[in-house]
Image (tube, rainbow over the protein chains, first blue to last red):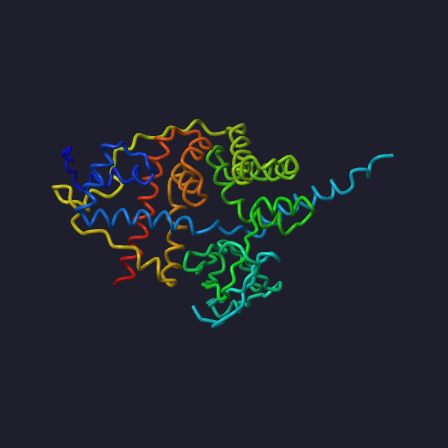
Length: 91
Length: 292
């Protein structure tokens, strides 16, 4: 069995970014997972990052001001009017 | 904050996408918020609902919200300080109106469907545009031109990519060709995603990070967390805000994000981790505050 070189928490935290994106090299992944197996604190950090990602996915878009919305609905109304009467200017 | 309604009805806006959710509405007493109940609730079989718009009659505000796995939602209007938390109280699940369906409907002239897409996507269009152009006014012009392009091109939309992907490509292309900003240089980031003083000289945590699980389960703190996350994202440098919005809020893949923002995938990941670490830190502060 290959010996896995141990890393410290600070190093583990650096690796977690690419780990979450599935982009760690095999070697780094082994080192990180070996560390995580024995370190509750880094396990908690990983859980925090996963929760953060999930929470960010739930926040929804910002509110739009009424003015901004109205301006874009005007764009829609104008488009509909132009489309609705294509022959208006025709003889 | 004075609770006004112990239990009010809030109805989702689209006929096929309606379910009653039970809400607790809190608002400053002076606002006298009332909640509309618009259309008849119709529940049809399908997936669990994940998005909804909540309409408040007075003050007139619309909110988009998403329901978590526990079928709760929590949101707040920064403008009016009206706060809504809700649970879906009907056991029926409803079918969600997806973007492509909304597109088909506004092609038939349905203004509400267009409005729903605008409310859903205008903020992120502005974000993408702002990444490429150097003023908010230019970004607004680019976003408006994008909607015009959508209206003109919607009939030719073939559905090979999702509506969202199509929309984001239009805005990115337009913003890029407006191109008022110099090409961004992604700084080489050598700092740690977590502040160095959290570790001892051996590089071990001095205090282990708090677990967020309780925070996720608690609707009360969800409200604080959602507000904190909004603020944390708004506070990020432009490039981080764009990356994390597209990746985590909009759910695009890293390669799609890289392509829209003209970054390498490796740089995108570095920027992403930095942004997530910042948001994590903010959420951690909320979590720790809740414990005290």
